[in-house]
Length: 205
Image 1 (cartoon, rainbow, N blue to C red):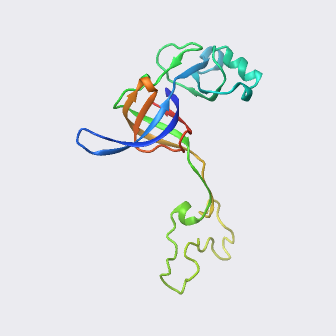
Image 2: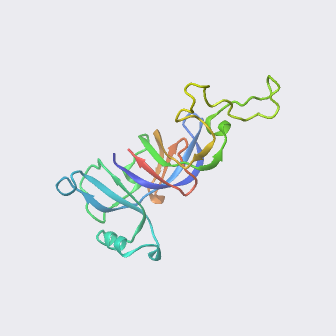
Image 3: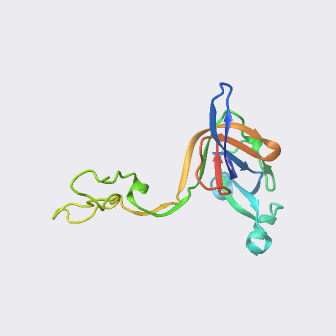
């Protein structure tokens, strides 16, 4: 799937032609530089490697500098491969947000916000006892029983329990493109996308 690398700017809302207020996310998408061209003859598949967001020279190394120098650009912070681009691209070409059109649908993937160690109520939506019956006065948000008795005499894998929550790769599909602002490299999509502000996201057609 063709696409671009972007950075989440934040959320806002827009009014449609019927006066309905639509929540949306603003993403700074591109411009992305073609840093490598994968071909069937050499690599066994066709793809474009795109780089986004310049990296400081002191944060790079000679191997990276040499790789990006072939494309005539500086080292990039985020590098992703995309397949399915239409047309011919060569090293050093720049792909902008103009590859998207208003009204089409895109998939956006990113790393969700990290929540740290959380209990079962927040992590899995458990209801808790809620002081309802049987004199439960100190177990409001506890998980309760986690296993059977002498058989199977163990806790099954995948049991929903407290633990680290968030910081996972999440993809949200079929988000409608509400607006494209080429002069500022911005794309506005309907709804929310994973990640905190200024986090990297991948937009796929």
